[in-house]
Image 1 (tube, helix red, strand yellow):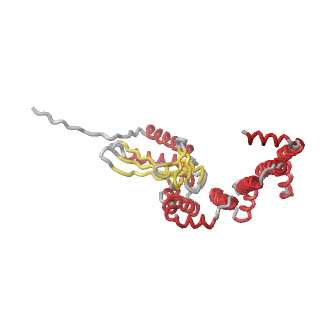
Image 2 (cartoon, one colour):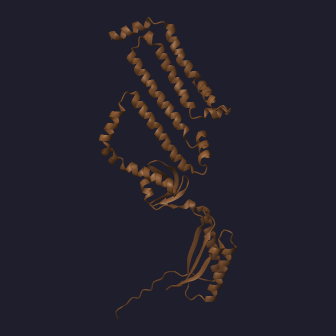
Image 3 (cartoon, one colour):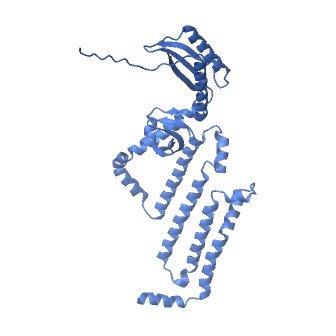
Length: 356
């Protein structure tokens, strides 16, 4: 308590004007941080006069935070002599300011490497405009990870930790780390395989047993799939790279197939007429590939005659395909009724033996 009271008495002797100046420095940088950030970004974007685009820059928010923190740091330095702050305390505050600055600028650089940033769009146009957004986004994630790793090493250096000793320690425990990171390495390798083979991209509807759904994101470790039940499934990339993948979004046409089993005693001329009418009906529909139409007397079964009807529908969207399939089924049922052809069903005859 005596130390605290002595410290309060020492503060009371400080000129009020110096404290007010320090507060004004903090307020000044806090108020004008947006303006300073805007001016700096404008200097690098001379061709851009749109204020909204300048404020949407990746470095706009980090610069605002930086100058706000800078105001606090300068105010503390200004009060060093009046408050009799020790050099050791100033060194600690300086290191904290440097670490915060590194994190802020790492955030700015990381935000510059996103799929929607102007810089990345220009890079994509100059390098390979045809590259898929999902693959490019994956590469950008690697770049962002490298930025944060570099920032982490800089922070470690600022903290005074010997990197040589750290690397040596990692070398000694390398076996343990390798064993612990096997699954991560497999998933990372699986992610590279996905982008090299390109079996799917973000937005595709895929099926990987036992899951199927729309791909929402592809990360280092896993692929996020939104299922038909609207649940979100994270599938490890190592599993995907070793699984059979059905990409329904790449389908060019959908198959329509139906087997009709009609009564065994149906006259052949009726069967021929029915086949002719079905073929004509399919040919008249603009949604059917005419060269794919198959209507054949397929099999003779114990309980009836099997007619195979098969064709390809142009509609690839699932809901439209179901609607077309429904219309085809209705047309076939209509032809069956007009030709008085009855379908048969699986039946069993059971004989009961009774004793006299």
